[in-house]
Amino acid sequence: MTVPTDQLTLRFARSMNEADQAAWDALAEPLDTPFFEWAWLKLLEDSGSAAPAKGWYPNHLLAQAEGRLVGALPLYLKWHSDGEFVFDQLWGEAASRLGLPYYPRLVSASPFTPATGLRFLTDPTVNQVRLSRRLFETIEQYCLGNGIQGAALLFAEPDFAAASEDYGFTAWRHQGYLWRNRDFATFDDFLGTLNANRRKAIRHERQALAAAGVTVEIVSGADIPDSFFPVMRELYDRTNAKFGPWGCRYLTGEFFEGLPAAFRHRLAFAAAFTPGRRQPVGLAMLAHKRDILFGRYWGAFEDIPFLHFELCYYAPIAWAIGRGIRRYDPGMGGAHKARRGFVSVSSYSSHRFFDPRMDMIFRTHIDRVNQLEKHYIDELNELLPVKRRG
Image (tube, rainbow, N blue to C red):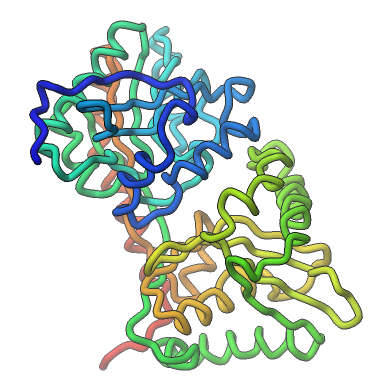
């Protein structure tokens, strides 16, 4: 049955508790990413990680027809840009120089999760074009009616970023990484796509760990020991503490405590052990859905050469190959990813400024910014150690 869009009721919810879990997850199920599922977003709120005390004010957009949820978008009202991983200081500085307010902003994202996948969650029985129009119009009306300076759609699916431009948004390109499984049967098959020097280097790194007595295993779902979650919390804190004021310690202890009950089925851990030690010396936490794997957090109690590469790259790649997973998003940062077979790809955020002066500045300069980012992506891909045909 097709539901006419003029029968929709749209409202903003101040908590994920205002949305029915089964109804929300039915809309989120087609997405490749697991990070817009109800349990993940609710845990971020309930744990105090993405909550008003941290400057994340939930304002989730819900569209209902005849009492059932047919559209949704996670939204947060914010007075800062922390935890977004879209580094917008350039535009904030421009606003400051003009004497214009930059905040508050209405941000759509899975908080602290720089992984592509954002789009409207919609029921396919509703006319998609008309529903999208109503959702975009509601966002605009809410911002204009409440003095909100801008709206941002972070790590949007490319088609969603493109569609948003019909509603006053402009897409901003960002660099990210992705590993693709080209029907590899083994890890050695993957290594076979790299040049001889890189194959030799990776084998050396893995052999050095084995010679040091380090063993690595990946466990997922129900096989994850409960003890791994408090260890991951400690390692998350330790890793971010190394970066001082530039660390990204946004998640609370309550978040990690709640993960086993809320999200265990989507998780896997790469765990490293040393002889005579029952507790892992290092952990990397991964998430997965269908044919895609995501690297999230990692840390180690000892500074062991090459351990980071094994836990965050090689072991997850081997695990993905063994399970037919087609893509692995290892997370942001680090040109060393290119040297280990991760392709640089474009990700997108879409932005709209409601002050006409900021809108003009953004639109005037964003093409050049996007061109520079494209050049950077191309330069990183020149570092890929792939076999050259000649």
